[in-house]
Image 1: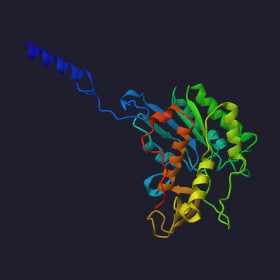
Image 2: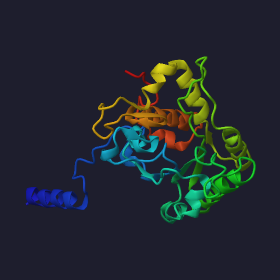
Image 3: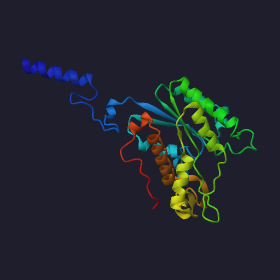
Image 4: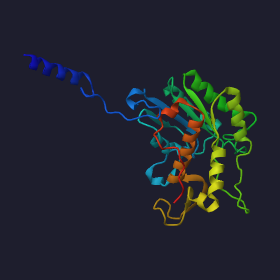
Length: 273
């Protein structure tokens, strides 16, 4: 009778627990806790083509947001809303921020990277001024996230892979990174200085090795680009992964609680093959 009662209790425990009576399988997080002990959080991305995700028919083109999920443990869900050609202004004007604010919840993160297209000041639908409209639009992302109890994080735009005749990296973002950094100070928002991190990375690699991170493809090298590609703004999958790695480094350096959800060993930069 006692044996039968024990079997009934075990069966009941297995039905009540989705993991059975032996407990859930779990992996170790960066802070020593297990993933099963960490509540799930969302990481939302607002940005341009250098952040965006791309379909297989455009491979090897990739944005850092597309590669970011592989750097976190399973308690983090990355939601990439970045879109090609958008600026801090046009992303909002086209209604792309609102779906993020509708979904984002307390404890989630909103990473915001704009600048490449804000520089197109002759296009009134896209361009912004670094001293006025650029920080004004960025504040709307910050305020929207905070209103929902989420954590905004600013990310300065990474460098293009363009070097001058003397082998020095060209600085193509003007006053936009400095404007974002200043806004971060004023609003007490963490700023990941991706423009500085990418500059240091590219200058250390040198011009030729830096090209291997970008969409610099020979004709016939990839079926999706039969005529090749000479693009020093957008990244291939490897380059996008390296930019994501720099963002991960910035997360750790900023002391964000999100750091505890980074997979071990995922912050060291690699070298192009």
